[in-house]
Image (cartoon, rainbow, N blue to C red; front, top):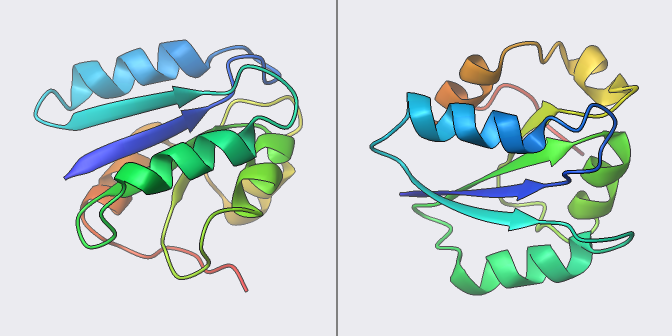
Length: 120
């Protein structure tokens, strides 16, 4: 299994790179492919690149960013595929509404195949 991370390094708190380091350090057995947005509206290009490599029966996606990054990325992510999210933005309204507070709980849930919330 590969964990694909779509990260916005410029989102609110600018902590995406630190979060990626923590994931790699805490889960050394995990293959991690990182896709960083490089400008406004880059989420589409990055999601398309991820989907070219992504094996839906094995791989997982984690989005690191703020509400804007999440919203833009999900416009292009297939609704049938799960994803994990950890907030690194300034407002993080989605994370507050879904009670996403722990990086490790977010990573563990997706690695274990748990569904903890649904988007319609």
